[in-house]
Length: 67
Image 1: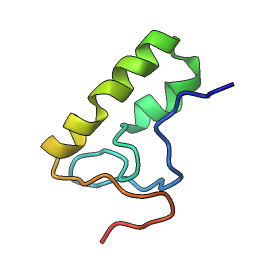
Image 2: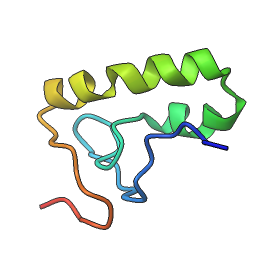
Image 3: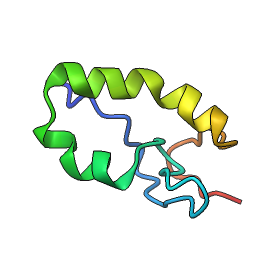
């Protein structure tokens, strides 16, 4: 069973954008993730690439660290 999560275990927050460097979620989204309905999780996941691009963050590979 898939957990439908964008988490790649790079859990570090960008102080400027307040987004996770690894997945692009905010702390409130991360905290509520497992309580969200599936449709809400999918909607958030769909907008993460654009959100990260708008913040100037590049998607990271699992196990990497931001520069």
